Image (tube, rainbow, N blue to C red; front, side, top):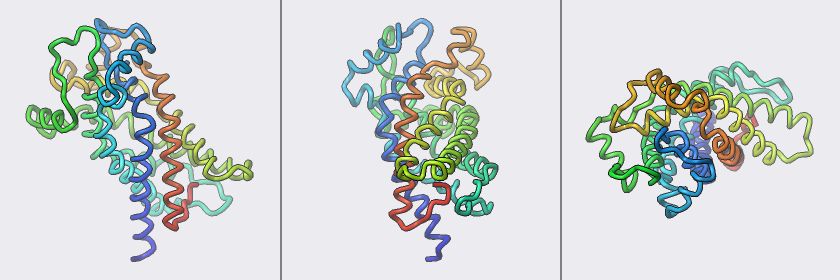
Length: 298
């Protein structure tokens, strides 16, 4: 096999491994985040602790880890596509940096954004099922609401009622969220690892990758939290279809709860983003090294 082909395959494989490992560490935070984001004005949690307490009362599989099997299955595919497209795009653009040279930040930004676009193909259906399941945790006045037993039942129901289009509900909003977030993600990671390796050479590379990945994850998520709130509400509303689209949902949210609604779950986003992205990036880079590949941006 040619060197270029083996590198691309290893890129995809490392991304798959990293994605599967990373998703487990942050799912409980993600479940609380979704619960906070989709709560209605008439069925609000009293506080963050009230939300955590409500979720904790359920069994782990029906509470903090509700909907985990779906992202566990899909995370490997999504991250494989994400990292693979990113790495391949950088190679095509000639963006692989030489040792001690300044990283090609514009090319990194473009490659990260492009990876964000392509990963939407598997990511959007995965998000729809995950968000629907996470939003179906008993709380307040939800008597009579339909609760899926698991991802397969949820997917079958959505496909039966809405077809493939139902699995891509909220796609434009997720695109607005994911594309800039992924660009910021890689750009921040590259900046931090480049400056860390040159100014803090005594710190092991794996440790630098861990913290750089965590910080990059937090910053990229905080930059797009308003879009994440709207996306969660759109995708959780797969049956009633109260919202026609992004603008309709955003305006309805604002009229009902004010500007603060767009920052719901921010604390959970930050708590989740650091461990998930720290582990993901560190495992990705170390996997590439184990496969005998040099990672130009780490």
